[in-house]
Length: 219
Image 1 (cartoon, rainbow, N blue to C red):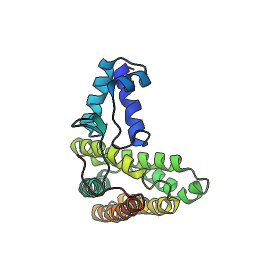
Image 2 (cartoon, rainbow, N blue to C red; image 1 turned 90 degrees about the horizontal axis):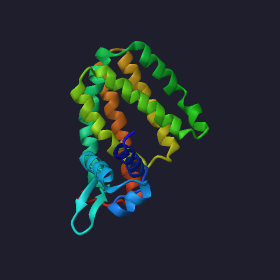
Image 3 (cartoon, helix red, strand yellow; image 1 turned 135 degrees about the horizontal axis):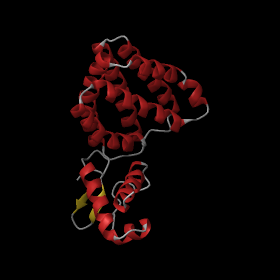
């Protein structure tokens, strides 16, 4: 793997996991020393992160990790509603029944999974659900838009990820989406997706208030 690609993946993971928090200045000297690479591949990596919207130039500070605000969250969920509801409609038409039957069984087992505090395993399941929905849409443009959105959603999710009660409820909501897809009912799948995203947004906003995340937009 090229040094720039490895640096990109490392920095991206650090940002999504909040090891590099919003507002962190990404100085070239500091980051190149930390990652053990020269400035040229680092600049390539930072350019990709800027294209992702995870870093931005801030006057007088250089490149910084972009902010997370309540307004950002609302705007991302507005876009997410539009994209994921349409994806659900298409998935109900083009579904691979065997794939979604397998997902159904896994989501049904989530309460037992979370009793062991297996949060990472649950998020792996959600990632497989997203991949199955992407494959079932048959629309590469829609999938591209969804994939560009997901890194921002992962970062937001970290705000409330320790709420196991919400994770159990979310698993039930995913199960309803899967059942609607299996039934071939696109509007029911879209409605179940709407409910899931509505509840997810409420939970994230409640966590944001508790953690005093600011209202303002990203600069």
